[in-house]
Length: 280
Image 1 (cartoon, one colour):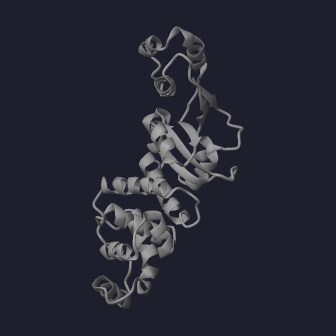
Image 2 (cartoon, rainbow, N blue to C red):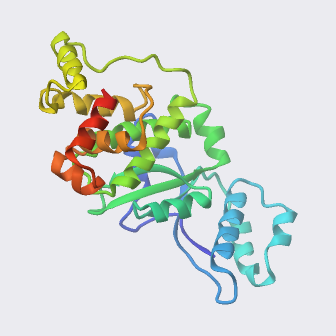
Image 3 (cartoon, helix red, strand yellow):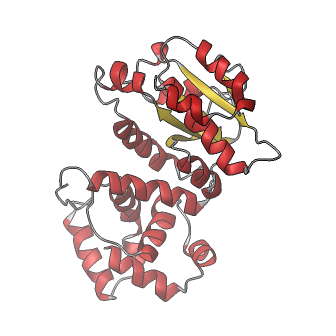
């Protein structure tokens, strides 16, 4: 069964993350944090854990009806009794996990969504905070406070994340998954008019020469960070290949040198230049 901590006295405080979102009424938000999910020796681990979390979510959403009682085995009677005793408003269920693709897949399969990845005040390590916004959140927060829907919070987090990637020690491909999700979210909304992230006519001429192959990338490399921020923020609606995205990500957001990009992506100098010409 899940082990809950409603007071959350441990090192990681999910509420600390709310400080990154000034639009949230953080002082009035109430949530529970999952500390650990146990499994029974004679039950399939993932199936048992998923069922426990499903029932927990249904309870805090106010859906603990008779059909749920029928789903719970007799050996879970104590757990169900504890849940019935819980009263009051709860806005979210949260978990703090490792910033890895494996953990992301696991908790997303359980219905959790990324709220924040980075340094939390009370922790030295980078942590990934994921939550399930509950019915109370939608009714009492999202509908009454501007820019507080979960999609809007994720967009706000993505802008913070993009700025932090130059110094965060984090897996590249995990970070790219988050950024691609942000692009997909933007694409689901109103069409974004394309706008070049440079205005200087001299830069335009240098870019044209770089694309033709008559200028080296060093003459346009100063534009790569602004292009990367605009693309991964969703404000530059262009279609890039996976390799182009990866090269742009490493050069523009991670501030990698060409030799480092070669090592990470196993590309040649010519391939990197070809991908960057496609970006421009």
